[in-house]
Length: 243
Ligand SMILES: [Zn+2]
Image (cartoon, rainbow, N blue to C red):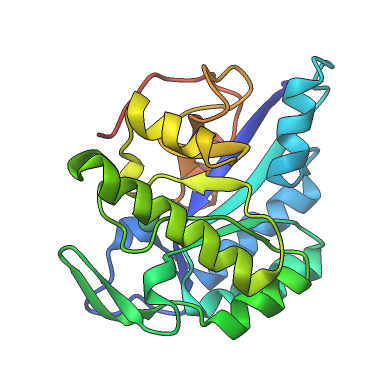
């Protein structure tokens, strides 16, 4: 049997893409349900991000394929569309809301998307109480590598601080906006006492070069169930960088 850890990267799960929707960042709710049914019926095990990292750190042989579910940006529909499905299957996950846009439409850089509203503080608190891990994804979704160091630091620090205040829990995981980072940014994340960070490097996670550069597998609107199955096969880490 093949083994390995696939950390899946989703953004928006919705009924229909709107006219402003980036289809690379959208998955229809029907496809998402089919994907979750496949995970349930296969021999793969859906685990929390912390659980997968523990398995990686313990040097124990990973005996089957582990899948971790992550959702970037904190789309509001996560609350009423995505979470009920995950809850039905008993799957854990991590979400990374853009902390400067809570309760508002997405507005960062070139993205001005009235079709994409970000979760409110209240809903984030409720989801955290129901077992969803909340990770940080900065305040304003800038490419951290293009900011002055002090500004990048503030972007990361304030998002962690705000989400910890909202949830009353430690925020341990960080997701680099646009997958952009460099050694200076990694050092900041480590020094702020995050325990791990997810990237947009494509591939399996078990042999990653650092716990602060965890590879993921992007799921998009164009991925039918066969493409999905293929993506989560244990195909090793490819060193693709998106910055
Ligand atoms: Zn993002």
